[in-house]
Amino acid sequence: MTRVPLLSAEGLVSGYGGAMVLHGVSFSLAEGEILAILGKNGMGKSTLLKTIMGFVAAREGAISFAGQDSTGRSPHLMARDGIAYAPQEFTIFQDLTVEENLRLGAPSDTVFNARVDRLENVFPRMLERLKQRAGTLSGGEQKMLLMSRALLAEPKVMLIDEISEGLQPTMIARMAEALSTARETFGCAILIVEQHLAFALKVADRYAVLKLGEIVEEGAAGDPSAASALAEHLKV
Image (cartoon, rainbow, N blue to C red; front, side, top):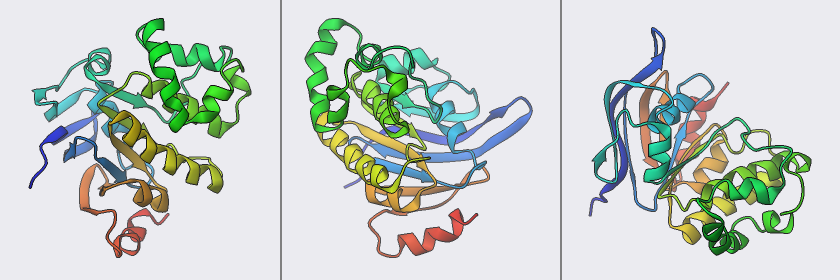
């Protein structure tokens, strides 16, 4: 049975100024699904997430979320509708505590208090470090904080940009487990863009390869031949 898309794009074209980066990108993400968008640097992965979120304007095509046309909606409205965005750049407040950063992800103190314990299943370190200044966390822990803050909004969809970048192998393995647990605990679908092939295939249900702004290949992440077939696309 075909799953009804929760988030989808059809013929998406976008870019910066007169330079187009995406050239007719189409994809769908079902409720509770994890889709990995794979590709090397400069292929348009981050631009795709920013276009979905409304930070970059779509020049052509359409974005649909929860059955509604979301093309051209502003970032704060996309967030209100239920899409959380964890960008590649660190966007935490270094001088605030972990708890103060987390509270920014909840609409009120009441909601924060009701939801924060649910992070125990996903990122228990965050609850152990609530009073610690965010800037003193390791790079991997800061990424956990970024993800934790997004989860406190209880989004329907999470957009995650290169979460494995710069992490040690042990932290990458922990992040893979955390993303799977986040889906189970919070019930969200996840669209993740990545270059780390093994990490992406471990986490995702499906993959799509973005090359020069176009989807050139798609498949099931669990396919035994996926890793060898995709290695060429990600070769530097």
